[in-house]
Image 1 (cartoon, one colour):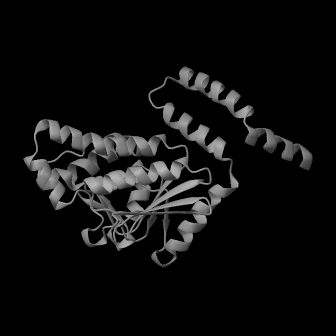
Image 2 (cartoon, rainbow, N blue to C red; image 1 turned 180 degrees about the vertical axis):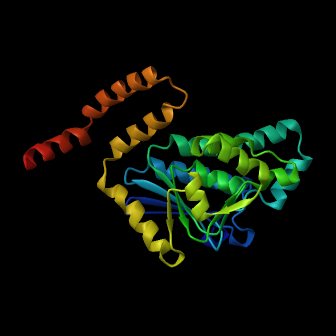
Length: 256
């Protein structure tokens, strides 16, 4: 199969697993094929020893516009069991992003809407071009942004989350950064080089430390303060005996 017909493109160079949603003619809308290809690409990238970071972007002018018309038509005609299986497939994608041992970065240009906005916000870091737009328009067609709400609620305040999911309006990159949906906003003309430089920074940090840090950060969701501290003790001990930590301490002591 040629790259032109693939719904997702994948390369891995210099420690960066680059995943590109490749349905530009459909604004990279989500369908069954794209979701499965995306999950497979993330698993491939995460399992590669050389991978330091995974970068997800969209081909063409938009990141991802959510479910496409065929997917919506399928939803309207499917049984309860079929809709449940379909929804669980998307849930598996969000869990996979959260559980991957390396940082996953969304590089958003153009529109990231509905499930596309959920996909971006599910990533550990969101980098946006100044022209990017974010939104959850599901309520405009009587749908509920149900799974992406679990992600949104962990990204922004309760008031902001309520506003975003009940009004169905789009916000720009600067406002999304103010809300807490976006980490960094870069000028449109510098976006590619800025993103490359940003993800290149993960080459300078310990892969094992990042894996432990990511797991611990998300594991703390819902924990009491005492339980979070105790879990931190356990991870602290594990980190001390890793090869990266032992070598890092040796290098530091040698310098001093």
